[in-house]
Length: 288
Image (tube, rainbow, N blue to C red; front, side, top):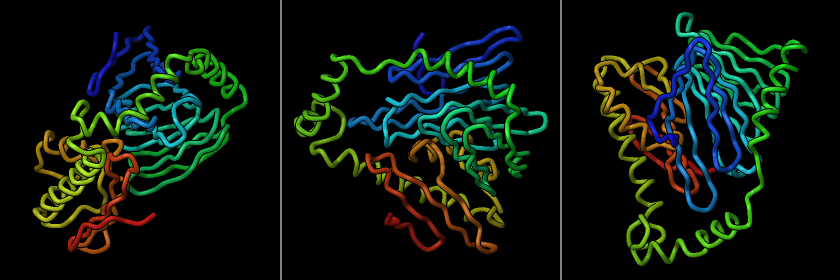
């Protein structure tokens, strides 16, 4: 069956499931796992923004070389984020201990919590307990071999784009500006309006986030980039609306710099993933 944003897949004690994507990426859900599709976004021009969450259990993922050089895939848990490109890895989350483990068998993974960040390379394992980073260590050779075999099976779904797909993508990339001007695709009356609207949505979401932060007696020391858990008293639907305006449906970073001072960064969902920074005084675009 086809999956959409916010769909949830659960496996039983003896069950597994494999999710396969058109670019050849694949994810295998292991037994006793609950897995949420957070974002399946395709931006014309071949830039994809894909995000999932392991609510509990474990999943092995392979991100295809045909996913897109500027595309971003993230696998989250309730307390951490693993951002990847062209990589094979496993994510484990135990809600009882709030421990996240990421094991890398191909490529590298950027692993972060609201208070720490590290990079994990091929043959390494990184773990966090809640938001606290535990550290990085080498994967045992035998376990690395077993995990690599699973990733190899997932890689078997990878196929180069066929001629029809390449022609379709080329036509879409060429004609999209003219189709938007004619109003035949979403995006308003000009090619730039879709990107402009996404940047505007990002800034408006940051303004709403600032209002909620200012309503607190003291701004939180940390802020979960995926759930905004520390925003107490804010309805979950409002948190979803705010996060949905950002690339990956998440904040880029949050840092407290005083009792009522903070710096929040988020990327818009425009083609360039424009980075914005919010303080108590202003919201501004950050040059990169």
